[in-house]
Length: 207
Ligand code: AR6
Image (cartoon, rainbow, N blue to C red; front, side, top):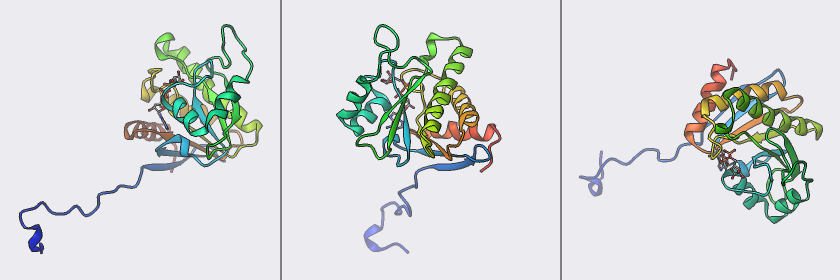
């Protein structure tokens, strides 16, 4: 049956809104992996991980979004971290530092720096990306955190191929989870989310 007013018009869509994609896997005996498509700055947990640069002075991409959402105190807290290498490096590639989350729903921001893909051999890039994840989780464990959310570190302007990055990131989190109960990846696009889901399945993780 079509009401007279709809004659000649295309049928109404039954459902126009789709629930955002999300999937859970057992990452270790004690940790859950939660894959979500969405905005990392909205994560309500202990910490979000920032894909920062080595100066920790903010930037574009997820770094810019985190600084916008956290407010100016985040930049002040980053500036207060010591410079550990000349000229003005506060966080060498593969390392991680921590600040409060200020206006974010998450209590903490763990700032890490992934490799610029074109500047390293494939093996070196993988080792630096794994370190970025593991060192972030070391800080999370030191603070007794139960939930931490990562973006796709190095997969934006730093140019890391998605499938390679997902493999490295998931393995590093599996090895470094410690006593963190929930490790989330909050991925900004459907494409990135699908790659993480495929690589979680390829790693043999079970729902
Ligand atoms: N929530 C989740 N993911 C996001 C968000 C968000 N709000 N915004 C962007 N992404 P990028 P990188 C995704 O370039 O490659 C900065 O300027 C994005 O789609 O932010 O590690 C820093 O200061 C991509 O999948 O980080 C550094 O200079 C992923 O986050 C440099 O970029 C990472 O993209 C770091 O480059």
